[in-house]
Image (tube, rainbow, N blue to C red):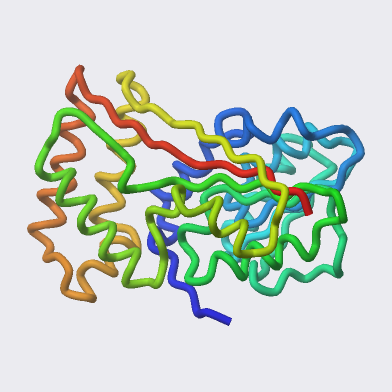
Length: 267
């Protein structure tokens, strides 16, 4: 079983961004396939914001969120309690060894998980194992090399190069979106419905959200720690990239497009 290193880590700037995601903006391709009474597993649930939306769609069925981090699982459980969502459970666990017997769920969902893993095909096989025959495995993955932005600031080009080197140093595939269909076929799925969607950061609020988050991550998260420890960048370089993100966020013409691939794979 691979030993994973999460390129982003769980700094507050990362968790805050993940907590802003919803089922509507992150799993719109799946929502029409959900119905009341389904049992659903959300792998790599993070702070649970998407899981809670999926739980609403399957109620009174049970939604279960799983994440490798005990800390973020605790935050997810707290969010569920604050919102009064009762048909959801959260627990820590490993995507390569899901702690459930075969055919336990009607739907298994993962959002932005596989492109962080050293063996995404093994993870998909394990997700398929716990899905009931005829059920769905639903996965959405970003493709970093396909991201585009304006203005073409050199600091953001430097960020992309650094991100690619950090992620690949962790054995991950940051351009996983374009490989998602192939991974599913390699994992043994034969009935796969592919699609794609994007996040756009172009309004002042969305630019502040995205640019501010990365300006922090570049300096303070596991991203910064890994860059410095491996000699991939020094502190002045990180400060330059961080300042570039803030300049981009303040530009009224600023545009950042983040495409993701999606699959609905029948077990």
